[in-house]
Length: 314
Image 1 (tube, rainbow, N blue to C red):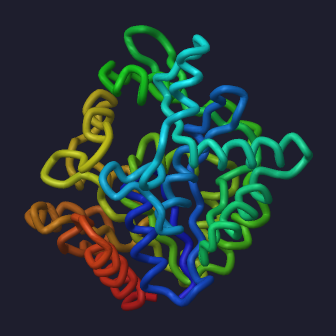
Image 2 (image 1 turned 90 degrees about the horizontal axis):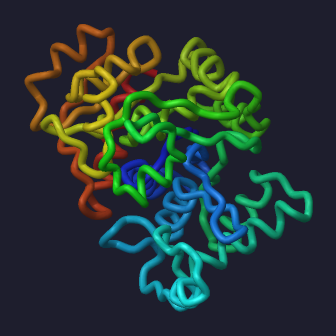
Image 3 (image 1 turned 45 degrees about the horizontal axis):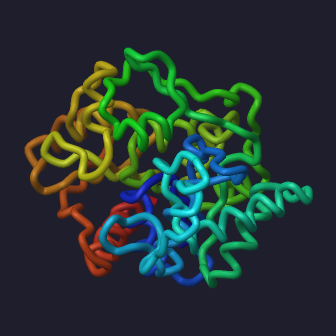
């Protein structure tokens, strides 16, 4: 079963890990959000892509879910001594990824080519595609004004209330041929349990991607979405607070409404089983299961149950 998953952040990476384990090698393509990419110390950092990368390579920090296990911090410590800002911490091993990526981009490579080469070097059997080779940057409006996403997310620890979100550069950004070809060949599409506003929405905002998914559904490739909200709360990150401040219902149903019209199966946690009828009233089949992916077995189970639900209607 050829699967395309849209992902950003830890939740998306965990389901992608389950999908990779549940599928034959090469059958999974992950389209990663690049809206929260940033430039630090002269290097391009791709947090969502790299969280997926390290997770699928089996080297992610198992506690925090991002970064590399057993990381060291000598470079950041030295940068601090030299007077540089160090609130956005990059580990020594992680820094090597950003150095290689930036060097290849400066030599003329596309972001997609640089990303695939790094994945190959780490032995990742799946493809992780940036949503675009063009620069798209997420900005959030707070009472302090418009902030670069990592300023809000890391420096300010997601404390300011978000009044609006925009994706700078999305009006001219193009999807890559690799992304469009992957969706065109997909037998199913999965929207991972990532923040629907700042992880999945930037991907869907790239011209042509939403249309490609619509065309895939039209030829019989169903779409599933897994809720990142359980019991009215985000398992990780500010999705629940963003939903509230932007006027959406903070629940699995609130997320389902954002995906209404493009999703066939909506996966919600057993804690939210009572919401299944409201989800199905939106025109989706509700799959109720334990969506808390605390370990590898749980991630594979959620992946297999999601794929089985899609296969039943394909």
